[in-house]
Image 1 (tube, rainbow, N blue to C red):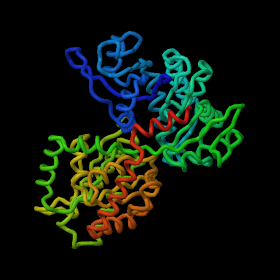
Image 2 (image 1 turned 90 degrees about the vertical axis):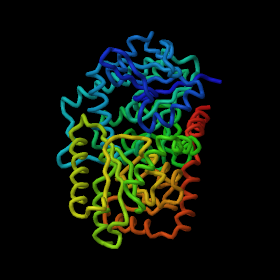
Image 3 (image 1 turned 180 degrees about the vertical axis):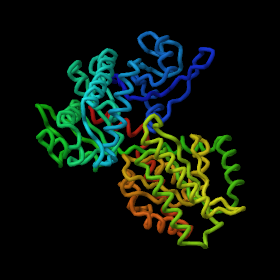
Image 4 (image 1 turned 30 degrees about the horizontal axis):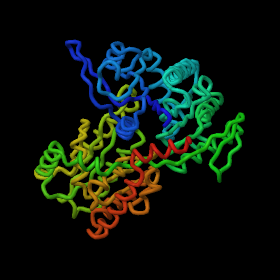
Length: 474
């Protein structure tokens, strides 16, 4: 059994520094961490991640070589990297989240942005340095012929850097986002675009959530690098090396999700929500206030549904859980404010003394989200672009009798679209009509679809998803 290492920006735990100087540890957030934490620990993998906060940096400085597991913490094998804050900020916020995320999700307002100037070049140097820190740490920690699983767009350069240091290692890279088509990827400076592609091609196996995203990556390799692409074999050959392209559609561990959703804190939230909404039907959405999640259009669709169907006034409530995301970026602060403005407009127009048509929550509360799943009659998932979207998979598991309104631009649509009410995320009127169809769908049909959705959502749970990629490195 070869040793396994996992590398990602965010780790399985995070630390908070108290006023008295003490450190408290909690589970790391994010879908990637949720999917990988148990798997990595069960397989004895060493996880390499970045210190994200002052609390994380404080813990690292007390641990020999950043190995938190060797400093008495119950983290599983974990090395946390104390990257200089200024370098981390430029790499994470300016490049990963403000450039690469925007490119892969097609988010730019192109008449105004992007513009790649001297400042961006400094930021790109930080992204290179950040990736190099990971590559060096992995090279130090990896035993001979170990398997290294590099995660996501933050670490696109790591595979090629690591191969330069340790050619004996077997390296996989996995992209949890969509991949931009060549014409949009070409917004990046030519040398940056080439370096990103060559970085991932340093891996033996490059994994994507859907065949569509993997094909877009291969198209970029052909267009930007002039690489030799074999669509049938799903391989890219460039600079004398061949990288296999795999599709691994991350699913949900249904048993573990149900176990968590049955705990007392979730039951308490269910009782509180039911007391708040009474016996009304529930349309539920659960998202971060991320630009790609399309929350504002979803709210506008609900408003149009109420305008078109007055018979539902007083009989339906929309639970919209929109948790703040990336508030250090101005675009995200404004988007959160836009969500709140739109919600207030709906409340002002339709609310009565005994009916709240919309309940918006912006405080992150995982048990409350699980409670909302269990109560949902219709689940709305309408991103303008999404690598997968685990909400679309978790909802049908916890509420198998609910209808799923799903954007065709979510990666999950490749597996779930046949049994969902699939919509164009830009078509507000069609989304409003789908909400009505979901509410009026016969119970038997909703249950039939729900069972098929739940089966598809659990087809490749995290353990199997991870093992599949390890097998691809054999």
